[in-house]
Image 1 (cartoon, rainbow, N blue to C red):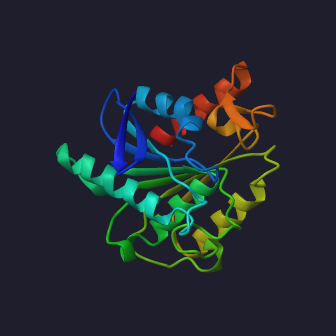
Image 2 (cartoon, helix red, strand yellow):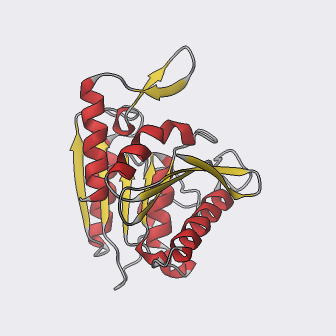
Length: 225
């Protein structure tokens, strides 16, 4: 893993892939928590794609929009510099990062980009997304340039209920977007291979076999849904 600046003073961890492709992976609401996704990022990279995991801050005045879009631009430029198609990028986000990833995808035409596929992990789709400032389920555009969604959610999630992904999937289907939903026996933090440490008030890598198996399945579905 290598840590780079994707913008002045803004850091991203880059997990070199064992094969082809690129994944941009966004963490959730907590500011600058790219380290929470180290386990998942490494597992994805071992399955092929190079993975970029940037810091971003939902506590910024723009709720993180500039950070998110700058990390997207950085990753797309990286793909292009390596001779790839920047529209082949797979966009993945956890929690509020998943909401942001979904917003980029449904508004891709307006942003002047393409997205190969989008994976939302434990998305809290009732919250305004950091990209548009709107609630996504309030209106998803119908377009003939749709890219597929994969929604992965823990059935024991008590922070963002699995019902949120179910409702978002229904909204996508009504707007004619391809979507698949996978419900796993885990909670909000277990889906990215972590446990919450109450003492440190921070997510730490899980050491139990059940959670490790869950995050391995998540990595599998990101690479080959």
